[in-house]
Image 1: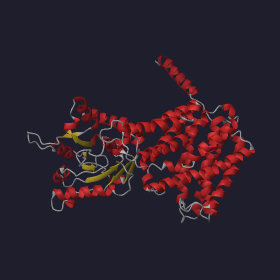
Image 2 (image 1 turned 180 degrees about the vertical axis):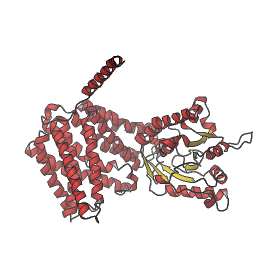
Image 3 (image 1 turned 90 degrees about the vertical axis):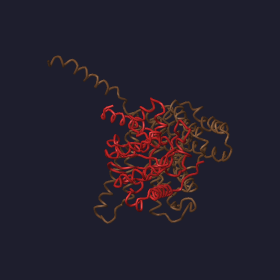
Image 4 (image 1 turned 180 degrees about the horizontal axis):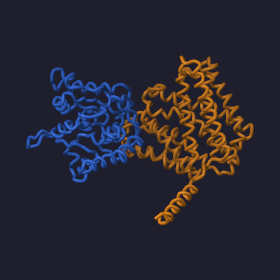
Length: 335
Length: 222
C-alpha cells in the first residue's frame, strides 16, 4: 500500500520543488534590497521611539504621527511586493495607481453626460500607455498621450456633437490624462530603460531613488515646517507651507540625494545635487498644484470625499511633478 | 432550484460580478455603514440611477448575508426574456413585482410580504425607475404599504451618488467613478407615519433621502 503511494508522492514533491525553483527571483538588485532593508529599520526605529514616548507621556496620543507612520508601513510593504515580484508586475502596479488617481480626478471634476464614451476612451489610454512604457518603445511612449490621445479625445467628443461646455470638458480631460497617466507613467518607463545605463542596478534602482526621495522630501518639508516654519510661502494656495519648511526639506533631500546617488544611480556628485534640487522643489510644486486644483473644485484638504479610499491624488501629487522631471534629467544625462 | 444551489449562485454573482465591478473598477466610499441592518427582516431604500445600483447595494452587506438580501425589481423589465429572467431570479436573487396591477387584481407585493415574513432584507428603489441620472424623482408608495403591514421592520434610507455618472440609462459599458454611499438612520412605521398615514411616511422617507444627498457639494453633471 505504502509503495503504491510512494510514486505519486515523490512526483508531487518534485513538482512543488520545480515550481519553487521556477518562481521568479526578486528582480531588484542588491543595492535596492539593502535600501529597502534600511527603510524597514528606519520605520521600526520610528515606531519604537513613538511607543516609548507614549509610555513616558501617555497624555499625548501622538495620533497624527502614528497614522502617518502606519501608512508608511503600508506603502513600504506594498512597494516591496510591487518591485520584488517581476518587472511586468511592477508596471501593472504603477498602471493601477494611475488608474485610481485618474478615477479620483474624474470623480472630482464636472463632467458632461454626453461624454460617457469619451471618458471611456480616456481610460483606454492607461493600458496602452503602460504597454508602451513596459515595452520600452520610447518614441511612441513619449508622444502617445500628448499627440495621439490629444487628437483622439476632441475628435470623439466633436463626433457626439454637444458643443455646450466643449472646451471646458476637453481641457479638463486632457489635463487629467497628462497629470495622472502621462506624468506617472514615467516611473514605469524607468523600469524599461536599458540596464547598461545604470550599472548600480538598472531602472529599478532609479525608480526607487525617485520614489524614496520624493516621499522623504514630503516628510522632511512637513517636519521642517513644524519645527522652524514661520514665513508662509504660498499663503493663498496652501497656508500650511512655509519658506523654512520648504528650504529645510530641500536641504535634507539634497543631502540624501548626494548620499544615495553613488549607491543607486550613475549620477556624479554635481548631477546628484541637481537631482536633489529637482526632486525637492518639484515635489513641492506638484503638491501645491494638486492643492490648488482641489481648492478650485471646492474640495478641502482632508475632506471626507476622499475618506475610505485614502485620497490617492494627495499621495501621488508630488510624483506627478518629480517623475517626469527626474526621468528626463537622467535620460538626458545617461541614456 | 434547491436553496443551497441558489445561495451558491448568489455568492458567485457577488464574487465574480458585484465585487470586481464595485470595489475594483468603481470604488465605494460608504459613510455610516454601521447603520445598515445586521439581520432581516428589514427594508433598505436607495435612490435609483443606474443598473449598477443593485450591484453596489449587494457589496454593502457581508457575504454570508447575501442569500437573504433580495433586490425588488420590475417584472416587466427583468422577466422580459427567459434567459434574463432565469439569471435575475437565481443569480441576482430579485423579487419580481408587477409595476402595473394586472387583470387578476392580485396584490403585487405579496412576494415581498412573504420575504419579510421569512426574515429577508429587501432592497427597494422607491423611485421605481432609474430616470434621469443623478436626479431624484418622486417616490412611489410601495414602501409605505410594506411598512404599514410590518410596523416593526426598520426602513433604512440610503443615498448613492456616482453610479449614474458611471453608467447612466442607455449606456452599456460602465466608466469608472468613485461612488459615495450615505446610509441614513432607520425609520419605523410607528414613529414616522404620524398616526398611520402613508403619505406622511413617504414624505419623511423622501426628506431623509434628500438630506443624505445634500451633505456634500457635487461636481456638475448634465
